[in-house]
Length: 259
Image (cartoon, rainbow, N blue to C red):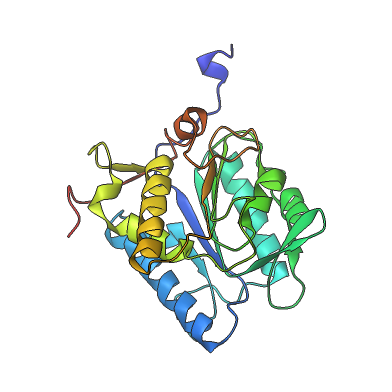
């Protein structure tokens, strides 16, 4: 067992957040993702007190003036290098991926303007994040379960919008995630902190309610890998739930209750 003096020092600061969106698709999706990203940015600022420099939004500046710009393969590679540096410095990092993915034989591909990027390529770009601080990834795209096998690692927590049993359909996970971050019920134990586990569980509840309200069969099943074993679970399992809670894996609410 490692001596506490030799254990990696993880700061108890709020996480640094990246909101990525690849190719949005048609005009309706372009506007949909712009609204989603704007709301998420405000939520992290107004409800959790994250300063603008802690929340980086990658999207078309014509739609979101405060965004960093359209997310290309080159820009994503540059941001991954920055993410690795921050993680190795002990800063908890949370990454959110929106847009579209599709399956490849033995891989998965995140759709970007110009050349796309595969799960294997993302694995290599993030390989330098060795586990000195938690690295959390929310994959809110179709076929997102496939990223787990490539991006798993020490002190990494991965939430996928879909599971292996799901077909390649666009998930409602992004909207459910936003609602989970906005609602009081997400803080299940009432401690003023929203852990990744709590966010995951509430997102699943909201997602199910969305399908039930439309009397539709649920076609997406979010999963959580919290212990870094590469096997995301739906419930989640106790090990995954415990692994997704702790220093660097929680957001502190500014107010005791949401509006």
